[in-house]
Length: 556
Image 1 (cartoon, one colour):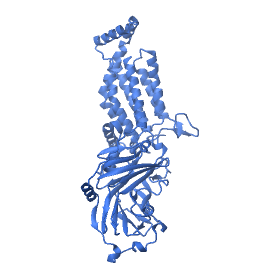
Image 2 (image 1 turned 120 degrees about the vertical axis):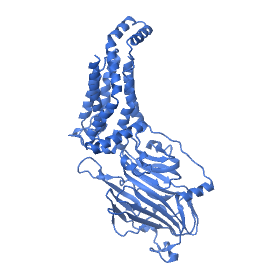
Image 3 (image 1 turned 180 degrees about the horizontal axis):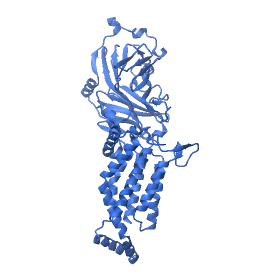
Image 4 (image 1 turned 90 degrees about the horizontal axis):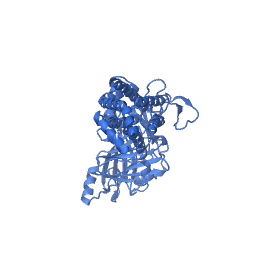
């Protein structure tokens, strides 16, 4: 029966979508633009302003001893400075002037009340993230640089007004490298200025780079994207971790680079984007390195140049990232149907902020709204299915009459459809039109950080995690930990089974058995999905059954 085949096609397309989303991401061939000498000079002028630099020792205003009197940098003991802001608490080590910790104050590691706060820079990410380097290693010893900070305390409070933290390193021949962080108590964004002061007698040509380091956890690579990304030539590039070995270099106009997971992102954002390079690497089994290489720059003796960046290490909140106006919001991508998922997210947040502050109820209301918009399509589908149900006895008679001649049987069947003005695909095509909406909501509900650790009712205390009633100390086949009873998922499977029984019977017994197996298959698929996704599917099923029952009664 054509209707059964389309139903099966819909189910298979859903499974293919999940498999594709899990195993594949877009791959982009590397772009390697060439530049003339004049173009390089223009790029250098754009990324950094060249200013004269006079060695502090020559003007007798040095606040620190000149480089020749400094002990070897590697012998210094690196201090760690703590920064406390309303949004995060961070630690920056004088070793590389890099972040060794950044804890988000509004987010926890787990949903439990006694859970520690979310740490974005785990200890395995040694020597930290946002490290600075020179591609050609033109500064001897800089790869092991221990900076000196002008801050004498151990902890900096950033609560009422912005504050700066300056780190300085001096080479043996008088080249000064400064990293100045700018903290704002009203923002997650952290400003970073890198200044190179050439107090030596030599001309230096090199490519300055900044590096992000992140530890990838196994449970972060489920169905959404997790890994390095960038906005290159205005296009979002998301590189699957398994593809880095085959392609590790990307060239173009880079607006930002990042490493992201399901809910959080760490990013470096040049304030003056130019043609640059993103270079990726994997260390060990799970340490991701994403490096932003600036164009080659010439540092003449007696000059200084400053490179300005913004840093963002925080939640992938669309509302938050939109407010920064730096295109970082493009890191939130819901796949093929992003154009549908984004307004659904905005609507869900509007319901939560203005009607009922419970994301579970917001999902139910959102489902009702989408169901209402698609109501005419559903009505047309169920009306056609009801008409097909009436036709089953006549179709069976034709099959018996022409059981030895398939061609005549098909011709007679189509003539019957024309006589009663019935489209045999009328019950399925409207459902196919709704598939993009289902997939868009699937991606949105899976990746929306608003649902992370958001409670609903009773045992469902985290809409971003699978629902589990009780907690068993033994494993269950096909189930990921924690182990328990997936009550919401079982109810959803039962609703699909009931909905299937309400549909017209299949003419072919084999097709009928396949259709009855679909609820079981979907139950196993959803057993590890977040409870927010399962809630959406369950509510959609319930109201679909109500609409189907109403239409069947009306046209009985």
